[in-house]
Image (cartoon, rainbow, N blue to C red; front, side):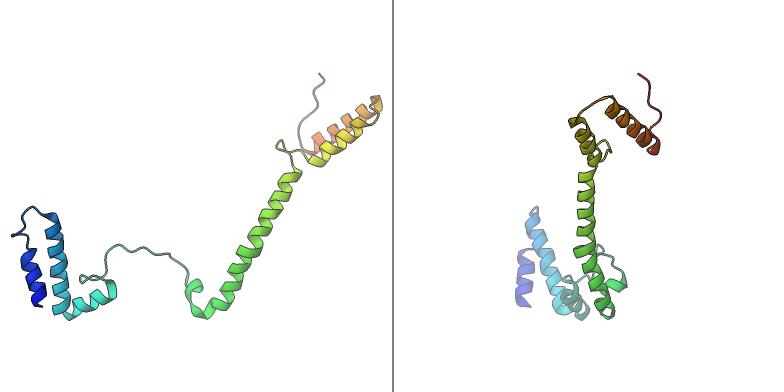
Length: 150
């Protein structure tokens, strides 16, 4: 206790006017003295790290009781693991495969390949009529509107 009193005298704000470091140290010394003398402040010091008690600002994550309670851990853990290890990767892979089958304009890549296969062979008037008929059916299915006669 003598050490605390001597330090308090040394760093007292009246002896160190204009020294903010000394004032901050004096506050720490006075709080430590309170921890030694008062039992409730000593308990607060051990529990919260501050003799004044719990601070007003706390950061935490609000989780439902289902995730925290030990009683439910054998139900929650497999469900969460299956979501993160199975469902999310599966959904991502399905999206990647789907994005590879559709062009940026929304046309299927297989339609492009069929069109080029038809055009690589002999292109005659019947092939052109067939392609136009396929386009008309496709445009009606997709509600693209009528073909303009240009």
